[in-house]
Length: 322
Image 1 (spheres, helix red, strand yellow):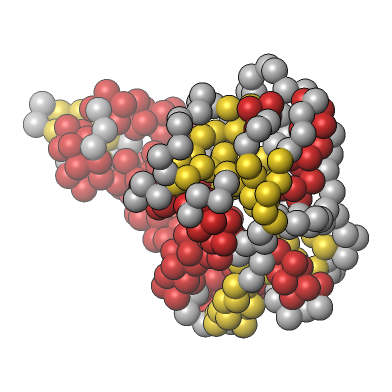
Image 2 (image 1 turned 180 degrees about the vertical axis):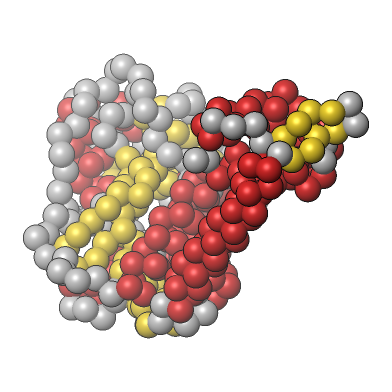
């Protein structure tokens, strides 16, 4: 028996009118009539008499009304009790995030946690990938959001999204073809992170496959440092759009989508593997997933397109750390 049909029946019975109930429920009158008929067919008895001025309950209809109201009240109690159980989860969770992702995500995440789970306290920490990895593996952080974390047996990883990489240039530089490919990097003065940063490894591998040589004039570890060096005119960098969106809007740098299969940036939720996860941490994981998905749907991140254009060869799996 469908709770929706029972709810519709209750509205019709209370108002004594199918049309009035349809208006209150914001559904079409024929659709509401079909729900009532379906309920009657399932029970095998008429529940109401249709009159010119409305409807009157049969004896069976009066019994169903009384029982339906009890059922819906019980259903609401179940929902309330489950919600209260979720709110009653208590604990302390330490979450580590990279700077740009933290700036986008943590205000929303913390608002949700404080509103829906006030008994869970959160300690948020910010760091680069190597630091985040150390915090998770040593147990200092319960959860971390990391870009392309290394494959380690002690870690459980879940990819939340994949971000496209962009060629970022100084303001005033001649516009490049949009989107550009790996071979278009030839002849550019590049500012890239040092080994074994995963973006550096990916780009060098892609360049070798494309038959070009990268001209790396500066090594810079850190998104903000790279962005500032590019804005100052030292060369071009390769970053995600989320890290330069505001700088592009201010006219400090330009950004052009860099296309190549496999040349992207995975944002992963990382934790230590364990048999019995703490309830508070499980709640925090769920909210992190939901907020990342919500921000991605709003365009906060530029996710990789499912179909990539031809031209650059596919890249094999990569390793390393960011």
